[in-house]
Image 1 (cartoon, rainbow, N blue to C red):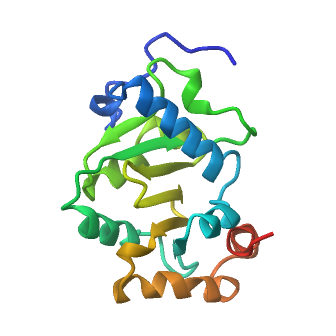
Image 2 (cartoon, one colour; image 1 turned 90 degrees about the vertical axis):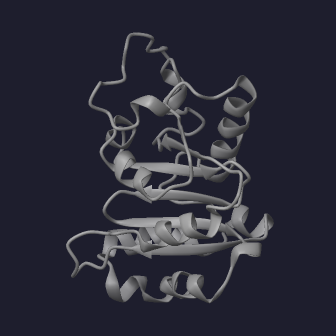
Length: 195
């Protein structure tokens, strides 16, 4: 993979101030987590979710709505705002074991506080433009999320944070065939059933 060392961060990128903030150890940890949980898929591996005793949540854009507003992300921020965590944002990729974020210097990983405004920042950023989606990893691994922008957000949530507010996102898996287009529903069925 060729390293892109020329300035790749546009001045207009809303995440510009948040790139280049990782220590070497953070970079290694985030790379390993990304490879294990997501790798080249457009979903989080349900076997990994199960083995790590996390809950598999889904927020999606109903085909009758204009766009996905990601209420689940707002709820996650509200639930975790009192923790000492950060969010790491990185692009998803299509090639197994070849992470797009590693091809850039600094690495295409943004580190932000846990606040709702950063979802909007990410949706307008260069990292989202790579493949139309991105991963969010909470630094204490309380949640790992994959966002295919405008379509769905899948979240592996630590069971300690589960409460009745998250129940609808656990139940939403039962509605994908009725509420989503066939291609998206088919992709998400791989994200739900353990192979």
